Length: 452
Figure (tube, one colour):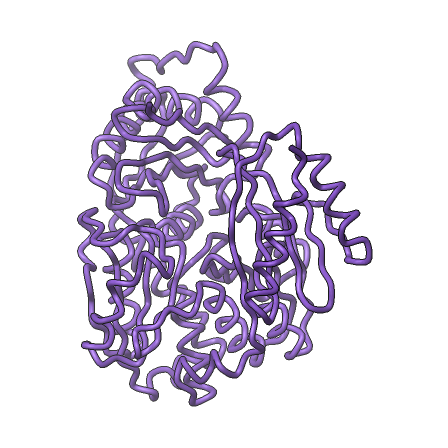
């Protein structure tokens, strides 16, 4: 049985040819055209082959609704945000399924400030999509026009380089003469990654960096999925490797021995370099490792936590005038570049941190306090969630409780969080401690407390 189409404030996502078909994409583009403020709409995609016909369909719909369409082509997700702001567009439609497997695709929405649409306006588009309204095309003399723009990735690279120069890390990176492998995995980010690194003075070796949608390993950058990459990295004799997901909004690291240290280290190392030069608040979500929090505190900086989700982190960054923000999945955000998780920012800041410290990646990781974060999940009937969360609070009564996003309980030794998935009948459980066995034990205890 095929999976249903997932419709949320983030857009739509499904299996192409099954839950995501032409009629679903057509109506969603109509809802977007009818709901956004007046103005042009950018249109782009990641490298999945189905993105080509989805873009053409969306372009025709937007044009028929009287919208000017600015086609950006195959580009990374964070580049959309840069382009929307640069062009003064009313918003953007990006065809992507992020880190989901190859059969999937989806449609993601951006607002005029270049961020993924927040709950209010995104909810209006979702409601229009699932409602019964009939969308009428513009009059014969009111149709929009289509034009192409091929400069978005260059604008993005320039913004990252300007930020690096302002932070005083551009020349240290160039002087360090890094040799780096980039695993683009057939996604949209390979070309920009190679371009940026070479402009940083890095010897960049591309691996599967053609944006052809051919994923040679499962697309989500996890330890299990990257096992086959270790020998490639060792054979290349590089200082480190950068790994991108298909739409290039997450960054994973591998050291020169081909070891994957956990995606949590991306944000921690990026923050360590920048906060030492430009102190200020760091914003992370409730599911992100203490590694990043510890880096901020060691630099005398505040660390603010938000509910899970890029939009919540962006809201927190704006409210706290943050220097940097991100999530433990390898997402890094610099507000000077954009309000989207940006691996190109992450690459530059990680290299800057290593260049300033003179450490290898292995040494920089070893210098951070040891933390082990375990991410698990379990089947969940949502009606049992309130009773389960109450049982968890009763089980650990002295632990500090945060109920903004499920339940997060914290003590001196670590923390555990339980939250219901928005898209699956499961609960996600994350625990962190200096001992992996202790973290796993907390997860076993938590699952054992679920009402039967």
